Every structure is written in C-alpha cells, then in structure tokens.
Amino acid sequence: MKQLLLVFFALLFFACFGAADARAADCYTECLQVSGCWKPEPGVNVSYCSDTQARCSSSCRDSGPSGGGKIYGAIAYSKRNGAYGYSHGWTSRKKAEKVALKNCSDNGSGCKSVVWFYNSCGAVASDGRHVTSGRDSTSRIAAEQALGKCNKSFFKGKCKAVVSHCSG
Figure 1 (cartoon, rainbow, N blue to C red):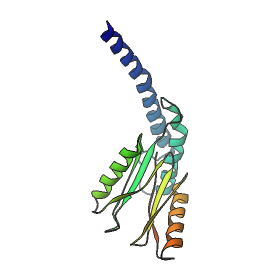
Figure 2 (cartoon, rainbow, N blue to C red; figure 1 turned 90 degrees about the horizontal axis):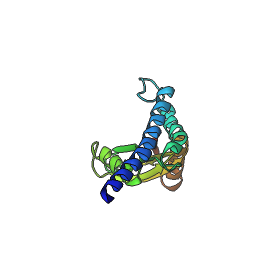
Figure 3 (cartoon, one colour; figure 1 turned 60 degrees about the horizontal axis):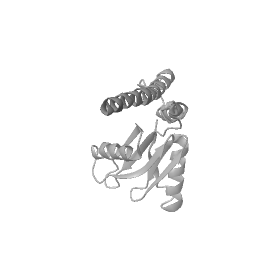
Figure 4 (cartoon, rainbow, N blue to C red; figure 1 turned 120 degrees about the vertical axis):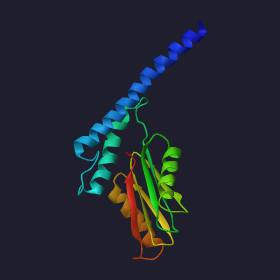
C-alpha cells in the first residue's frame, strides 16, 4: 500500500511540475517564433535575435514550476586559437558551462569557460593574449562591457569583441 501511494504522489508531482516546465518551454518557443528568431532567415540581425532570446527568457521564466526560474547560458573561449563556443536555455550553470566548453572544443583546443549568465546575456572580448567578459540584459551592452574592460586593462584599441550571446 505504501508503494502504491508513493507511486501515486510521484506521478502527481511529475504531472504538475513537468507540465509547468513544458508551458515554460512552449512560451519561450512561441515568443521566438513570433519574433522571427526561432530559426532566423539569412540576413536577420544576430544581435536582435540575441536580445530577443533574453527578452523571451525573462518574460517566460515565471512559467516554470517554482516561478522566477533561471535559464542559464555560458561562453567558453580559447586564447590559443580564438575558438569559442556558447550555450543557452539550460536550467543549471554547470550544464550551460559544460555545453559551451564542448562547443568551443569542437572548434579548437585550450578552451576555458569565461562567463556564465542567467536570464541575461554575456560577452567575451580579447586582444589575443588577454580575455575579459561582460554581463547585462542585452548582448550589445554585455559586449560593450567586455570590450571596455579589455581596452581599459590591457592594450587600448587592440581588443575586439569576440562573441556575445543570451541565456534564453
């Protein structure tokens, strides 16, 4: 009898909270589809879609089972050869960093996780030897932060924004 009750409550828990996760995912997908950023056509502004991901992530995160859910992303970068990888849409920082590292490693070697973020955007800038990062609500401002730190701390004018991406 105890086992039957445990199974019943486990199924009830999964039905309630699993459905909420599905609603959050549906909200995010629908938001991106409406904006034209779900599978962007060639020529769509990448910065626009990155900012849209953050906006959709923010507006849909309360659809999760606990409300105020966090959607993580990360960026990994290799000083060795300039390779980078990013991730988005994960429910844990660890998973977001792991995927970003794998994506970076697919493009080069010596990758390290540089920045992680949730319900927002991150960016990486480099002068070839040094790497800085930024975080903000938009990819543009995150990139400006990363570039500003790089130029302020290292070789002014030699730094370039490498990549910016949002968690949604």
